[in-house]
Image (cartoon, rainbow, N blue to C red; front, side, top):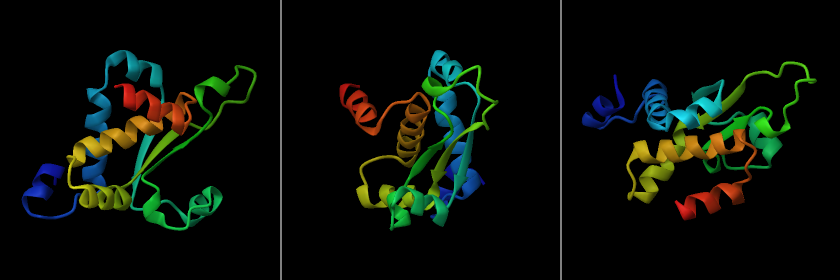
Length: 137
């Protein structure tokens, strides 16, 4: 069932629906940006694992909507062993919670925002740098 069909029936979008939203958001980005992103895997889960939350010092799993996992492109070296693939995680339940609380943004736009934010970390940008770019945009 696509995200649109889920919304038609008043059902929360599934993990697969979120994956479709993420794929569509990534496909809508400029081709040059997608090319620079390179090999990044996207995963959608309901929540971050307890291990991830503990490592980040986050107590409430609803506080984490997305996460970049990997070595950012600015810190990679040809002398290093081949790194594991970079991954962007999107956490469905916290994103849905934020979407419902805000009520002023389309779900697709919020998924796109989280996705782009995490890709920013792939490029080695800090949260403050990403926020500054978003404010200018």
